[in-house]
Amino acid sequence: MNQHDHAGDGTTRTRRTSDRAADTRDALVAAALDVFGEIGFTDATISEISRRAGRAHGSFYTYFDSKESIFREVIKRINREESDRREAKAERAPDDRAPTPEQRIARTNDRFVETYRRHARTLAAYEELAARDDETRELRRATRLGYIERSVGSIERWQADGTVDGSIDAEAVAHCLGSMVERVAHMRFVFGDGPDDERMMRAISDIWCATLGLRADEGRTAALASAAERQGDQS
Image 1 (cartoon, one colour):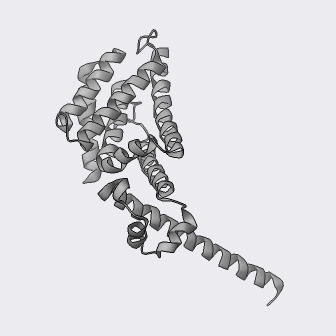
Image 2 (image 1 turned 180 degrees about the vertical axis):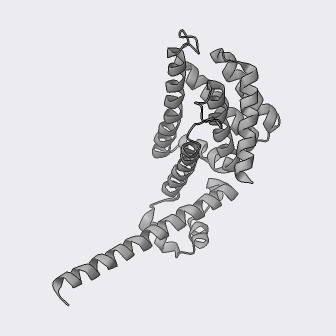
Image 3 (image 1 turned 90 degrees about the vertical axis):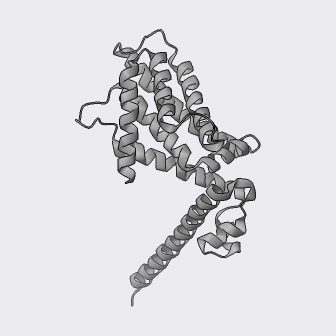
């Protein structure tokens, strides 16, 4: 065996070690996602997360220095899942035409609300932790600004083509409408307060359309279609 063979063996061992480390880290994050979703941040323990992941308690600290740090990774995973769903849909209407503003709004809101429904306990804890932890606050702010910037971009494109009134303050409206959707989802899925899901999504669509001067009837139709499409994907 020559020196190149030895080098190859070393590379293989390094790759295997790296793969095992990645697997362990992923297992811990997946377990934390389940634990935080079931019992929230406050009652979750590193011991329980490690147990669910099938890893020794001490191995946790190889990858994360605190419960807060793995919680932030869980939030990043939730954000990636939402982003992946957005990309999978490719923002195309069923007949391959570009989606109308009403359709785009309905799909975006449906994705966000569905994410909140699936992860309500974790996202409620996210708000609480962001109020007292600087790193979590910055992640929360960056996540929200990404959503707002996409909304601003859409509103400005619709203003440019004459679909939406050009005098509307796109940034301020995006912040206000985004905050409305966030709070409605929070109250609905954390506290069980508010109308049933179908009425809630119709009302959200009505408010967006009324604010932007879009057609309410098309917005309601799009909201129902988005919900039906999502339910079909889940079946």
